[in-house]
Length: 140
Image (cartoon, rainbow, N blue to C red):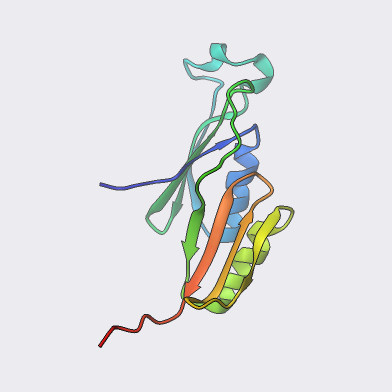
């Protein structure tokens, strides 16, 4: 079994996926607009260039995404995508790049469990956490 986040956007899925591809070093494996699919007639004509399905591959881990039709979009809530890295400089780079233009909920800093940890919602409305954990100490 594999669990993959599926992100829903309000018309900016293609822009968001290209941004995530650049910042995270992901590869866009699929980017399918409504046009040319059986669903094309179920969305307004101006919406047919919007994305019905996208797939990004981050070293074997998948993020999938699409644009919700205008009357069906709901702002994301109740979750965050956590990015775990081992290099504090990489944590800072990712946090700074993805949070630009978004809303920072917890600036990236050292915590009791992490060398670097921060939380934000990016400019596309996706909530993220960047986590660079400290070495785990085993109980005696």
